[in-house]
Image (cartoon, rainbow, N blue to C red; front, side, top):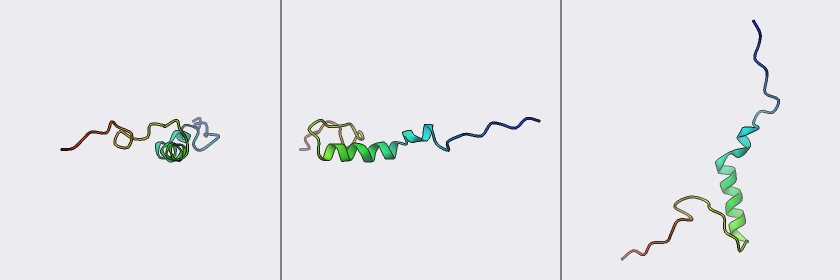
Length: 50
């Protein structure tokens, strides 16, 4: 039987790993006037608690 083709790079789609994107976004937010969305809790609307 034929064998399946091997992947040439181990993670081509895995470059979109969310934790890496988050890490980058936080670094951008640290020193940039334009803010990037990180997580719902971090960059959500601030609500006033009474």
